[in-house]
Structures are given as structure tokens and as C-alpha cells.
Image (cartoon, rainbow, N blue to C red; front, side, top):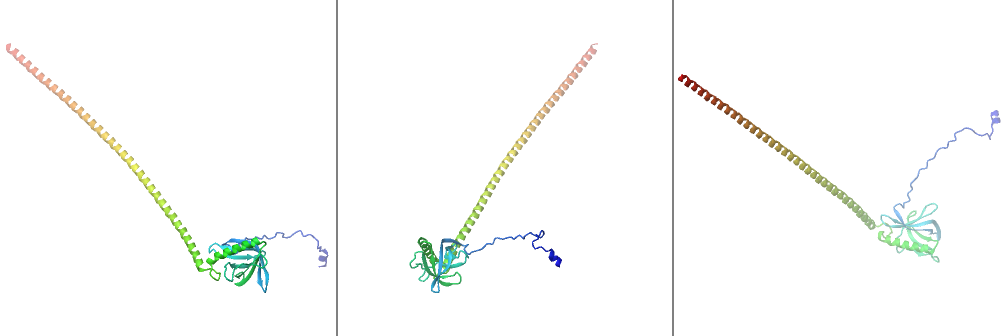
Length: 286
């Protein structure tokens, strides 16, 4: 052991070992913020304060937003703390006698104050103050905030929550849109069916035309064949007539020849008779 200690050198270079570091794969994670179904109605950089324990306390700094829901068309106010993205204000804009009435802060045109039932953490009545870098930005916020309140007044109930009527209207609108889409789809299907029917009709008419053409060509060919047959039969009948004529002429010739022969025979007989008579007469004279 003492020899090993004597040989040990703490500064000796290590020449062997496993130097391959393991590979770490980082997968992309889709984080949902809850704002996917909304569009920005207004946005502006500002600082939010909350009235607590008799004084204004800073709540968060970041882009305050008025978000318009794409389906039910309601608008809410939202502010996330820019460093942590923690939601520090979240409520519907619904002006009433006690809630969502913007009031300029005493002595400043850059700050607006309002009271509201907020849902950033748990439902709670809060008094907020929103501070901007300029009076123009603050005025624009008030204008958009009031517009959002007028829109929500038609869609939300007295408590500033989703109204069944508003939902029903939106549902009816969506249903109408869906019905229109379905009607368009059906119309397109019907149009396609009609087009197919027309195409089939045209194909059938073309087929019928082709069949008629073929029938006509067949009839023409049949007529030609019949004509050829008739011509052949006519030729045959003519040939037969000619043959009969020739046969008759030959028969006549033969008959004539036979008649001649008969006449010659008769003439010979007559000559023989005359000869015999002359011989007899000569004999008698002698």
C-alpha cells in the first residue's frame, strides 16, 4: 500500500476511458395558452396595479389585451406578467352601475381605474388601475374597452357571464352556417349527379347513333348482297334462256336434218320405183 502511494501522481494525464457523452433529444412541446380560439381586438403595453390593504400595489407589467372569441364573439380583458407569463387579470368587459366603468385616475390622463369581478386566480371583486406610457395610448384603451363593453352587453347576462341567449344566437348562427354548408354540399352533389346523368344520356345517345349507323351500314350491305344475288339470279336466268334457245335451235337443226334425210329417202324410193317401171317396160317391149 505504501509503494502504491509512493507511485501515485495526482497530475498524471489520464489516457484511457469512455469519453462518449450521451445524446439528449429535446422534443417540441405544444403549449396551449387558452387564447387559441380568440383574436386580438386590442393590445397595448401597460402596467397593472391592484388596490389592496388601502394602497395601490403593482400587479404586473406586460401586454394587456382585449381578446375577441371567434365563436361566441365575447371580449375579455387579459394581462400576463411578461417575465413569468402568469395571468394577473382575466375578466369579461361588461359595464354596469358598479363594474367596468373606466374612470381617469386623479391627476393623470395616463391611468384608468375600474372595478370588476376578476377570474385570474379565483373569482374575486378587484379594483384595478392600468398605467400607459402616453395619454394617447390610454385614450385608445378606453375607446376599445367601451366598444368591447357595448358588444358584450348584447351577449352577456347581468352578472357579466355568458348569456344563454347569446350562446343560442351563436349556436343558431353556427347551425345556419353548417346548414348552408350542407346545402351547398348537397347542391354540389346534385349538380354532379345531374352532370353524370347528362353524360350518361349523351353516351347513350352517342351509342344509339352508332348503333343506327351500324344498322344503316348493315342494311346497305344487305341491300348490296340482295342486289348481287338478284344480279346473279338474273344472269343465271339469262344463261338458262340462252341455253334453252341453243337447245331449241339444235333441236330444229336436228329436225331439219332428219326431214332432209326422210326426203332423200323418199326421193330414192321414188327413183327406185321409176327405175323398176322402166325396167319392166323395157322387158315388155322385148
